[in-house]
Image (cartoon, one colour):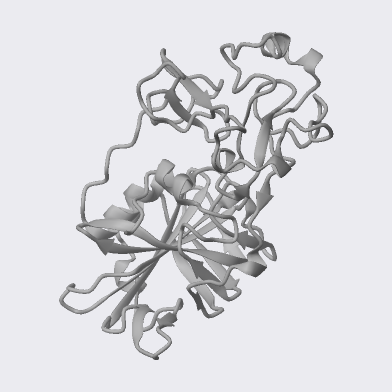
Length: 353
């Protein structure tokens, strides 16, 4: 799934809270997304696996650019996982190569230079390079990724993911069926709030409670002191954004926020959508709260959502009815797909401390 957070998060949340959205990084600039041709401004390179512009290896900024690891000095290295061992390499055109979409002889200039011992312009890596799998994607938790056969990505065949069966959620939200009978067509319409009065509900669909072993409640969704609940959504640029905010009559309680973002292209009646955070998912779910004077991501959700009915048409308000499974909520550092901190931070989020 594309990084939908980066595009719409600030606009959506701050419109709800009444603050000005933070400025987004400019496309092609440091910290911004790459140009469509996978390039950035002078002095920067495009990390294709994250669609992010960073400084090259000669820069003086600590970036997430992949680097080699010495098996003799890397504390996280195990001889059992040596990517250079006989039998652990893959063919140039292995279909598990990240970004390896065609044979070497069809790759043009980059493919011709791949293997010359130097990481040339347009190459992500050079043959023989390898990095920790966690640096390729937060969904991986161990082992190493090799440079693929065309030097335009990383082969993750040996990378290991965390087993969801071994990770328990912090707590869970009960299954729910809910219908949004008014979706704003665009964020500007959302900010105008023409349907605001009809979006205030006496009850919230998403509910859950986390307790200590002693039975003392430490966290609830919605806030137990909230008396009103605002459910609203809009669709824009191929993305549908949903928000559940709970507050009291004088506005002194307005957390936590339940947020959901879905790719409109997969919102088809009857479709069951997996819910997660990385690009592997077409629907994201996260909980925000307010700590240390700023909005931050507290938990992320995993489960499924079934599209019961949907009507989203250009130029008009729409509706969306859905049914969720039980949604497991996890700390961002320990999820079924590993630590998703870097993904969220790259998308412009702050993580609650």
